[in-house]
Image (cartoon, rainbow, N blue to C red; front, side, top):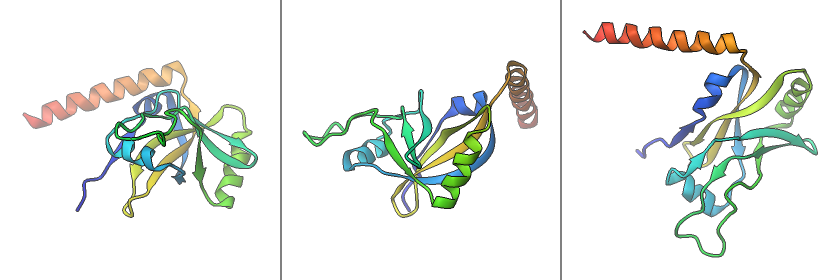
Length: 149
């Protein structure tokens, strides 16, 4: 059994509260999937937006494949996300509400070897919510430390 390849957008868990999650396919070129398998992915400044009733991913940095030739991809190109029409319509309606956004949270290789992106409909956390997240993480860490003794 092959090992599971997945990458998390750790900053998103701290910056946003997730309202709803979806798993979307992602349109990639051959050199992009090879770079993902090599671990050359960065979520810095990645976000999703609608254009012509289609969902696009912007800002995801997938480094060029070192063995790629002139066919190599652009590292920060826009990539199309694949969801069914019902999910797209639901997301497009929700995104019009004030304060909601769509962010990528996990990039993984599925069971069939295809790249998938878990996205979330999210609302930004206020400063005091972020402090609460830090306190909870510290207390959980302390509890784990005491349990191991």
